Image 1: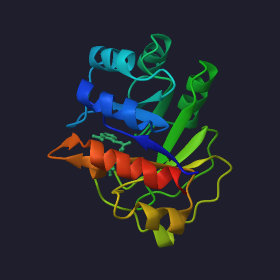
Image 2: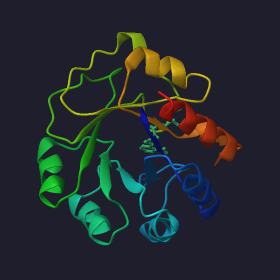
Image 3: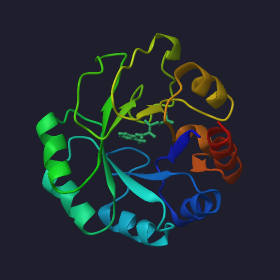
Length: 194
Ligand SMILES: O=C(O)c1ccccc1NCC(=O)[C@H](O)[C@H](O)COP(=O)(O)O
């Protein structure tokens, strides 16, 4: 089974969709942009989110102490480092008991050795643009998360081409800028049937 993370959740209606469809991970974006949530908003959404679904905090160069605080407060269970954080940052989070997703953007950087718990390849920061899946060369020991421009129309091809452990999707399951039950359900069904 391919697991799946639905990212960029911003409101209670979207959490209700997640609780019904049950992806493996749910993402709250703390970085700037249209998906950004405050710590307080994320705390409320985490309370509403099914306790079996881990919440991933998405960060771009956020101070490590702030990430640890969010984990200690139970707002997030996993940290996704989408900026220029270092392996020292990865280690500091792991020392605090927080699993880490380290993000690489293969169009502008190579996937280097990391001690993170997961390796994500993405085209940008919620860009909605797919990577060139055919040219991806990822040889890592960690589970691989494929992100960038995925949607129900291309998910099967992405799985067949890259064989990732997880898909990560945000804008591709939205209609008019909000998560759509129909699209989230289609996406999770495709992932979980592979
Ligand atoms: O989604 C954002 O607004 C965002 C902002 C800053 C850093 C990362 C961000 N998103 C990261 C994600 O995990 C997205 O799910 C991932 O990039 C895929 O997005 P999409 O291409 O829209 O499916």
